[in-house]
Image 1 (cartoon, one colour):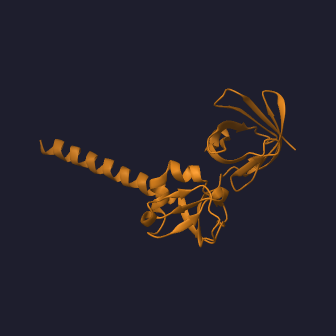
Image 2 (cartoon, one colour):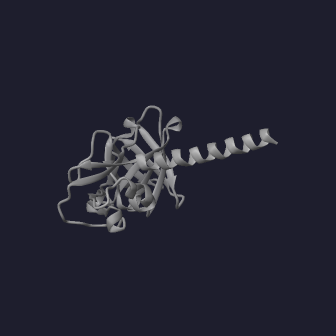
Image 3 (cartoon, helix red, strand yellow):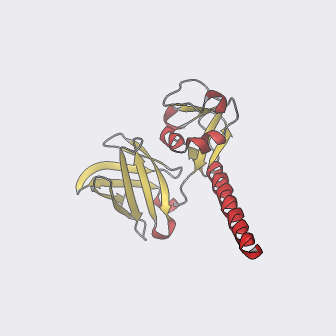
Length: 189
């Protein structure tokens, strides 16, 4: 009986420790950086939709009365402001909320873009994890979703379009699709 109790107790401790580790990791993904609209090397501004998606972790990176700059000109208040997210905020802020930029530097660049075989301007993937399309004027953020497969995800206009793409080994093309089953292809310029 004592052996069974010890095993159950050990398992409960392991589950508790894993829960603490995952919460600590989520909080580590967001970093408060001094300066309005600036992030450190290898980082980019958190988009408002990202802060909303993981509000507990984003707010956990802030001090009680902080107000930080988010991407696209937005802002987020700390717990004293109930972690409120503003899509736009023209005020001058002392800090920014940043997140690690994708670690797939070969993907960064400008591509001639097509959707279902039809030309769709140029899409530029910046090394900081932001991106834009010249034809639609839409902005996006991109994240590495599977390094082994060279797979990454582009999130356009706060989730309106989600592209899942794979970078070719020679880094000259990217191909994949979106949630609407459109075929996306980019050829490096």
